[in-house]
Length: 284
Length: 280
Image (cartoon, rainbow over all chains, first blue to last red; front, side, top):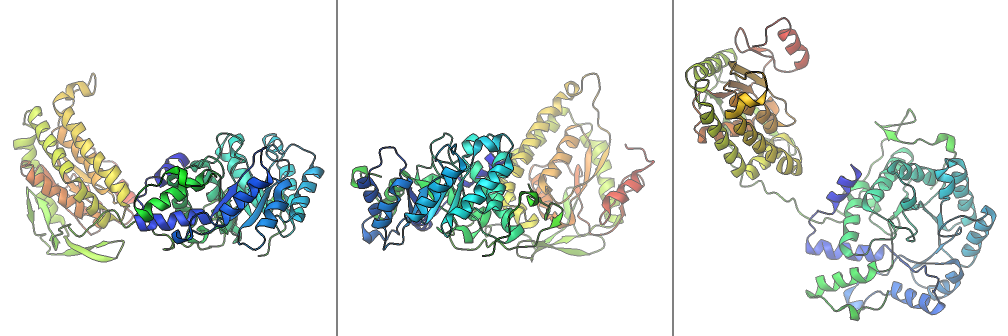
């Protein structure tokens, strides 16, 4: 069912003017991410510059929502983005596996927040979750929530390791009730990462949680979304599942690195009516 | 934003039927507005030609109902009137059943099976040709999504007629060890949820076997059924083989044998009427 319905979202026809609007929306929702072992301060600065101004100003493209980096590099990103609207997000809690002593994980979170992270992307403990120790998963998220203070908390479920849609749904419920501001599909280190059916299951969990409590939880599919076309299909899915309130960077994000350039390329194509060579776009 | 103190013991796994863990869920509103409208409605309805009035289809012709009564059929999306539908009473039903009996005795049951198949093939092709128009009409009349009527219902309607058209001359192979034969006049009542598709389910096999039909569509979704009657006319189906009567009344007897119970408590009434009766 989820697969069939998710596939249908990819078949909506989108008129050109809406496409332009949609592509700009996608850019404004993007968490521009670099999570490589080879990340250097120079690369982070470059990424921040690109997040602030993705394209020549005459295209009127908004800046990205955030840059997402490792805790070590938060301070550099913070310094660079001090006066911009772009937020600094940091992965934490022993990303990507999440298998470290809980105390250390919390220290990592506190450190990232102290360095200036606005948003913390934590991973759940899949080993505990799959062993059925749901209370432990819940408690870890709740403790991280405490450690975040005022920073926003995004909880990565790593759906590629959860095996069933029921598990995804249950993990979503646990994360939301434990205090997540966002639920996020994947780390991007495991395949499959974000898929439409999995995202749909999570969106429906968010919807039901909203009906029950009135609290709006954000959603962030991450990893595996590489083309503008896919991104627009996700937007359609959000619009038709949760409605207009979620069509903003406050409640919906894309976690991506290569997606941005494809979106910019399509955007230039819609505005100028011809495709530009990929060489004219800076490296992601 | 205030957050409840979380605890796993309160964790509802699924919210269903407006209840979570047995507690009713307060109605909250999701805003499906115009913030990002990506495409207009894909099907236009302005080319659909509707008649002001739809009469009863008896003996191959559209005839005024004996009572002279008409009821309104509305578009549930706009609640505007689409057309007026003639309402059948006992006299009309008697006429229809008589016509169907006549057609059964004189024409349809005696017709070579292969010839019956040809008529059904012709009907199927005509439905295919007019599929888009019928789909839009189905959506206007019944309120189902165009996606369902266009992509599911109409292709299946045509497919059913094609399927049974193919069986018409091969009935001796259809049920091994049993002999399929025509039985008589079939009284058929169909609901509103799949108006044309249900009509196809009922009509096509009955006709393929050599029976004739008196069909009553749901009063809320009669228009497409009556358009299908027009198609039967175009296919030059012999008079009286299919008769269609819309009705908006309580129990209306077709004859001493066949009865058409119509709304409200349809299930109950038809059960009471049919209990203790022979079925053919």
